Length: 125
Image (cartoon, rainbow, N blue to C red; front, side, top):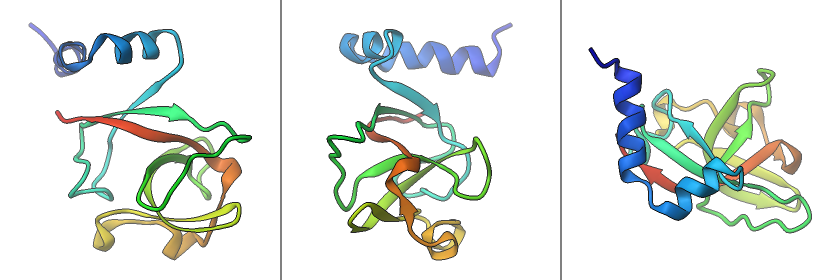
């Protein structure tokens, strides 16, 4: 019998192009599975995101980008949010599901140093 996780992993590799697959394998790209509904409308629970790590010297972030960041209040927890506003090296990050998102409206502005990466691809479940 095949478990749910194994089925998800199998479908992941069927939907990836070769560049993305090798970029993940050799570490140029990272991936995360979406948990929760704060980005509902764009991302659903179980979707897979592929993201590129942020280079702190060459920042390529714009309003509307989806990013991966460390949670500002919970150590070692990653979050996925959209860049809503930019102020020098601080960012207003918001979830697309305003009614069910804990984001900068609660935490305040987020420093650049806790943003991990920029989402490049969404693979729906």
